[in-house]
Structure formats: C-alpha cells, structure tokens
Length: 204
Ligand SMILES: CSC[C@@H](O)[C@@H](O)C(=O)COP(=O)(O)O
Ligand SMILES: [Zn+2]
Image (tube, rainbow, N blue to C red):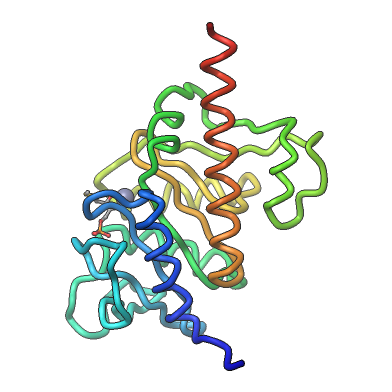
C-alpha cells in the first residue's frame, strides 16, 4: 500500500476537523512542514473543512512571507513561530471549538491545568494520569506578530509542549507529523470536554 504524502494527510485532517465541527465558518488554519525552510499553510478565509491540495500556500518559515503572493492564513506568524521554535514539529492544527473557546475564557489563570485523566496519555511523553499537564492560555490579540513574540518569550522560560490556547479564540497544537498533531488535537479536545463537564457538575 502506498503511503500518502504529508499534504494529502493534512487535507484529510482538515476534512476530519470540518466534520467534527471544530472549524466553523472560516475559522481555523492548518499547516505542514515541507522542509527546514518552507511550510504549506491554508489560504486565508476559506472553509477549512473542504480544502484541497491547491488551497495550501508555500510560506517561508524564517520571514512568514508567502512565496507565491497568494494570501496564507491571518495567523501565519503563529505557525512559523512554532516551526522555528521546534525543529521537530512537522504539522500545526488550529481549531475553534466550543470547549477551547469557552474554557479559555472561564480560566482566569495563565494555564489550564489538567490532572487525573487517563486521556492525558494521548499526548506524547505523558505516562500517567497523576501528572499535571499545563496548557498555557494567552490573551487573544489581532496583532499576530506581537502574540507570536509573547509565546516565543514564554517558551524560552517555561516548557511549551503540544499546544496553547488563545483566550476566547481556540487551540493551536502541533506534532512531529500530521498523525501526531491529529492525536494531540483529539486528545486535548477530549480533555477540554471532560474539564468543562467537571467544572459544570462540581458547580451544581
Ligand atoms: C472566522 S474568522 C477567524 C479568523 O480571524 C482566524 O482566527 C482563523 O482562525 C482563520 O483565519 P484564516 O486567515 O482563514 O486562517
Ligand atoms: Zn483562529
């Protein structure tokens, strides 16, 4: 059986995300690393659930510039920041789910703490529900360059793995390849759903 190309895997991931309802309207953006210098990023303003290979644009990782003149995602600077910070990152998925949008607003602290869930082990390198997993929450901003530099600065001081939340906006997560990025997205989204339910029930 022939192995599908990373871009085909990314297109399939976009359709899966769309079917889950995790990228409503034109929300969300996705990318895959082509090599050390270039990534392929979704075109801005499209429905990410129906993308094809032609909807991905070559972007220079060092400068965040499109190589073709076409307009990649408004959040290109967050993807390129991740590829620069983590040479092992091969794919980045950004979604607008209800859980990530709401929890990131309700959480007053600088991170969403996840503890006691078996599904924490869906994230690479996590081996027990007894650890506390911190997913940082950054205030949303329309100034993507400033946001990227804030997150880069954070990563210089604290561990940053798997992904981060933007308050009232959504989740951005990554993995070594599309398959690992998908697993991290699905695992984190499950954990967010559990955490939302737990907070609701414990309040009652
Ligand atoms: C529905 S508008 C959402 C955008 O502002 C943005 O947050 C987003 O995720 C999609 O932007 P895009 O430029 O299409 O990649
Ligand atoms: Zn977004």
